[in-house]
Length: 214
Image (cartoon, rainbow, N blue to C red; front, side):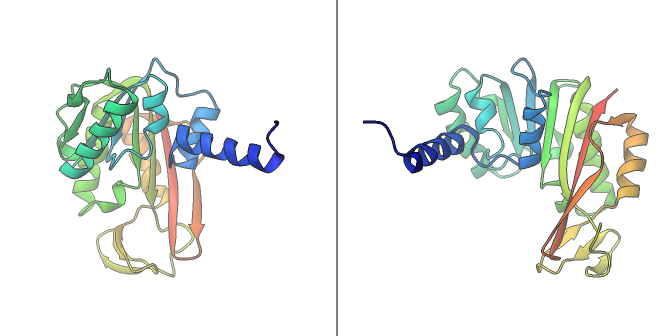
């Protein structure tokens, strides 16, 4: 008996959710544009439990992840053993992003989703960025989504340096467009996507920073 239209929609939704998990919509956009392909080695720096890695694990990518939380690394190792049992457990490491043990130019894609705004200060922020850039292969893609002051400049309370108190109650290290552009220039990267920002209910602002390592 054929499925009703509502049942088909529900089945389709469940399949998509199972296949892609909770992937960042702007990272999903890079997949739609054909920029991320299975022969690429992918690192999620600050991977947590692996919400951005489910599609890559299911699709045969060589995936690695780093997170300071040992619990998160145990979770992603368990997920990888179920979805991609060929991957070594050592691909997933409990270590700081600014002190990663991977070799230079090890990855074709480095993902940093909602991580950089946890920097303690500007020195810490720069050290994380430089370390992610170090492990990225020339020609590779750096994808970051991070909190910024863009569009909410008058709604954040300055604490010290680039740390601010946000209307959502959190304290974050916030960048602006000028900082990202000057950092891109100092890294020698090129913008792969136009700079874009989403302001979420005037409570926080999330900017995309997507580069190619030239």
